[in-house]
Length: 355
Image 1 (spheres, rainbow, N blue to C red):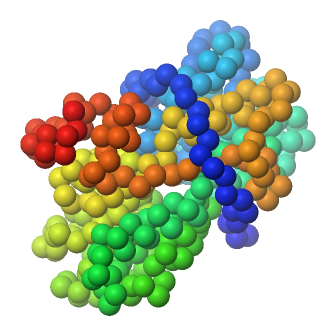
Image 2 (tube, rainbow, N blue to C red):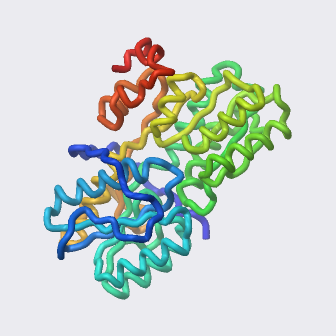
Image 3 (tube, one colour):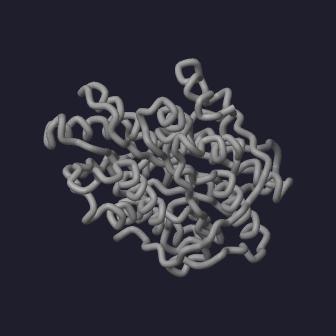
């Protein structure tokens, strides 16, 4: 089955909350990691993998914080599937067996998850599709994923300027099992096609190691001196790609990413990565938490629109480069300047006004 197609474009959804970025439990552990102890009403949170740092360090604590704000008597039961669809299925089924009536899930495999949703509904369990669309879910919250791809593609072209025409681009896309990856790819191609030559394209499977290996293969295929820019679907893979480029002696070419992860922000300051896409967890996690609480309490969920029949809210992404780090991820409190500006890049932070 093809990934769900985005049918609507939703404006920015402003969701504010106090942010806690405390260290989190071990990813991929099947043990329940709860916000509180005792016999409270439970909401499930299932995240897909731990190779992308944001899930453990941002999404999880922000979701828990938002649930506690909207429903002080609720408890969040958390699991991370570590990229294993079978493990996520077990986690989903266990949460239902434990009596959880609302589960927010960012699926490892959206097609397989759709069947689980049907089974959950038969047992009176509601499902919130968190960041990755699932057919038949009761609610869906994400950023405008096709627009993210368009922004990524345009940012590559902007970085190349007049050199874009005739330039060779390597595209390293996300995991094909993730419906968002298809939307990122579609959006990127809509910006890039006809304006730059795509000399090599492959999936990096959201894995920095695999992305680095694909980059090495691209260098061999296209030629060391013939690659002018690299599109990476996210920051984690961009790290592996940049390492591969460095090992081949290739530098000073635009490399993009996504997720505004701390290492990605630091690479932008250092000059090895050109941009990232900021999808504010301060918007995403609270919106998903509110959907979950409203479903639990039988309230209208307050969706801003609909995607393939699923009540949905799509949030607005932002391109982040060296010029707006201070006004985005620092201003929003996602990262403290002291955490970003480690010794190796401290002088460059000062020059950019990051403080």
